[in-house]
Length: 451
Image (cartoon, rainbow, N blue to C red; front, side, top):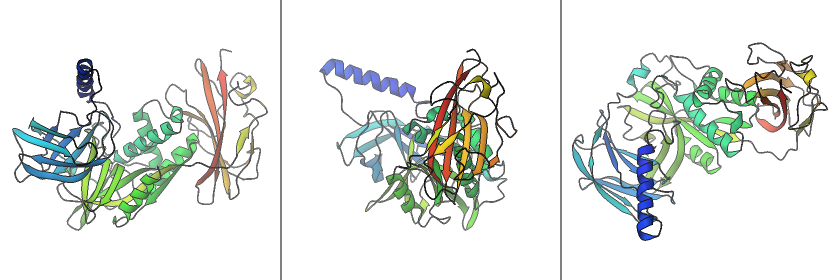
């Protein structure tokens, strides 16, 4: 669900104009949280959605929603985010049509309320049934289409992963290592996850794929499976991961009675467990309208609009940015960090790998990996060198097994940018016996053929 502002700009502009008008007239800022433009959508399967947009950020509270004087959402958690929506789902006694009166009351925080006459929109989304016709592993697959990339069928897993990795790298100032656009990122993850048209991605492929992708780019991201396939412990594990600041996703299991028919992956934004019930807030690649909030009863999502039978939580996943106190350092006698790489190590000379040295390898390291990437390459990050299985005491990083570069071949690919000055990021990672990252160190060199 890579889409914070697409399709939302007209409302954003309108909200900004209203705010400017109020300020001009009163000389003070309008501090309301709720926006005026409430939305209601009726889905073909009988589920309806109330969309609550926000003017600004605010502390989470709860919300109660009435449609034509009937309470349809009661004390559900609210996550106000500026210029964004919270979406709540319910099943009316009869499908909604025409014009309805909607009242939204914030039960906590500012205690605001909005009452509006709303014309009901009718969704033509046929749901995910067509995506599941060729699934061969219904208890493990994660494969449904995406609303923001409708021509890209069955890519929910790499799309949800891309959302998480974009957020993590931005938070830690490493987003310059990502491909230039999200479609390229999804394509890279599909390849590493061993995506197939029939089943999409299975849980093992999801964990291994992100791990391989992160190591190739020298990003200290640790991915783990949490919870269980039946979803008994998944909600608690997701709550703990989010509290720790990790990114999180959950597999949704689609079943017809007791028979699994397929699965879907969503990004998890928040989990709420209280006397008012259990709720999960998700960024769903199937939906582009906002953060979708569902009540959980006995492990089941109530009123999921894209599948009309049982939808339960399955296994979860987390991505953690590994912070370490280890003072591992990567240096070279040929150039310093941020300086130019001498021509003899590039296409302007012999093109041999530069000498490298790693120090401060942490205790418990079972092996080292080395990657060299060019994030400035015209078609996205280019892998110039990758090695794994390097002995932890090999301070010169010799030995190990070479992996494939972006040329499709093994071995060092000397820098040779088509134009301008490119950055070449050398990254060494220390791994424990399980393959988890203990520490990373980077060294960046510059090279230009024009010099």
